[in-house]
Image (cartoon, rainbow, N blue to C red; front, side, top):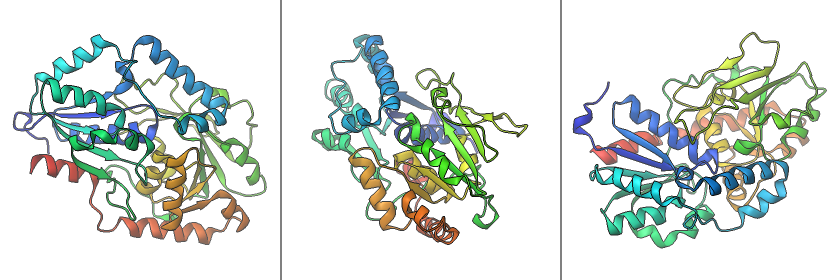
Length: 363
């Protein structure tokens, strides 16, 4: 049922495209508000950078894809954007916010905190809530902890246990025993890590491999094989221009279906929800995908402290294990089934993130 917008505060969702684990959960929340007829806005902080700094950001992203060591080094360095903003864009955003003084601000990226502090101090006080996706407080939130006093409520998805789940009413979760013999493999939103080399371990096994790519530059080393289906996020998708999830194109398959359209969630979830496992590094969105679809995750090498902590929590809760450990078990189905049971069990009785935010704002 759609709500009468005139009775509801505007919701401003603040995020970043520095990683899909920050951007996609924010966009899912935005879509949920939209469907309820609530006036909402989603903003990525990279839109506020000068054109020059935005181009540097995009080039850095491409460099990380080509050299994982650069990404590893960068993950330990502080991130600052304060000297990279376009002042005209900042003033424009502040003017928009002034027209809706009752807005609720929901922040998924600590990179926004200095700007929010400037606006709140010099123009209007704000109601600010923050959402943390990683399993422990990420380095970027620690970097900006001087702004913690501004935060009215913090939604930490993980503590020693799961605190919030992600309910997607229109995604059908296929019962685990009914799933196909498929494994989904990817390198996160930036195609990082040694995920393509994993393909060779399955030459003598009957698993169908769903390989998810974000860039066509990673195709060259992949030979055509009967058991590999290559998916690619739409190359024309640009989250700086459109507040939508990318289409997922099937670019190597005998299937007649060539495009998977996104819904109110990333299209990749339709692939993962019929898979027995995800093989990827322990990025924030990989963990969210695993949790939503109840699909065990088999970890490749983490990049940075945040991902190390993510992996440690998932292993402690028996929700995932390293790919190497699973390989050494002779690709045991029993281990996968046990992790699926743990994923289902951990969600029981856990509040949905969207419902919790909605009730806290409008109760």
